[in-house]
Length: 58
Image (cartoon, rainbow, N blue to C red; front, side):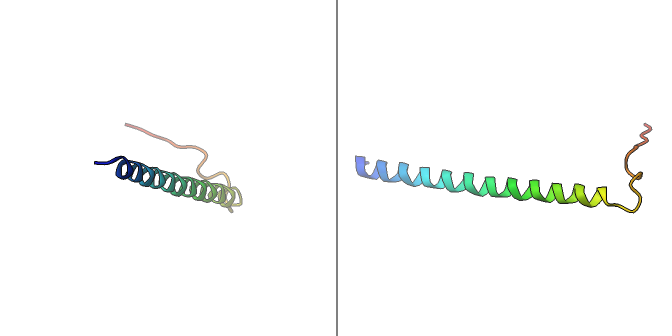
């Protein structure tokens, strides 16, 4: 393989990695926003005392 081909493939791999990171950041931001919205909805619940205690028996 010549140097130009290696440089081209390395550049392409770098671009793919950057694109993957950007997609992951977007997904994380979206998940965080969704979680915050869920918490707000739970705080405004009609019965706010529900879900605060969990009884577990094994």
